[in-house]
Length: 240
Image (cartoon, rainbow, N blue to C red):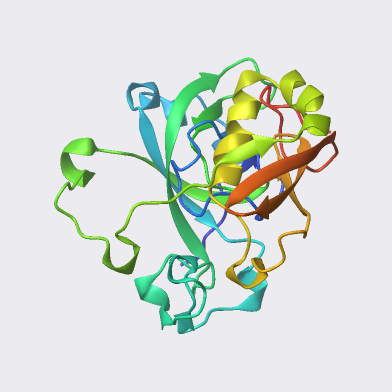
């Protein structure tokens, strides 16, 4: 069986660093599913507007060339315990396929590449290939008694503060972009192996901006915000 992408997600996340590890953790995150020409058809999305959420089957295109691994180190276990790849959502999978549940916020029929699906709560980086779209069915797929194994505990979040020098640039961001920045950084995007140096400055490509921050004493502190190319789409769906 050969799989060809049906389209690509243009996203507010310019890279995998600071992109949430699961969908829905950054409710303010946005994306646009742009179909490739063979599938760019109003007929193909007829009736989709009635669904609030969609499953996307996508490809881990940045890590696919590295192949798969039988065991991996999940971030939820601090990056120092191994589990089987099929007991994880690691990117290092045999077929490099991922599954993401996203919110359908609308359909853009004015775009030259329409119909474009407007998505919310995404966890996909800009340029992610999509292989299929399926509607989410709450009556069959919402399982309140399901257990979550080693990932069953809730997500902890860091407080995020904007330092004085960065506050004017932060205040100039749109309301949704400000929410995106706060949500993404509160998840502590640092790799588990890079948490020891409180003075280290990290940069996250979020919504068209490079957001530079440190994490000291359990608090994320934003020190600089710069508009840059290749930092993901802004909240109007515009890149460089």
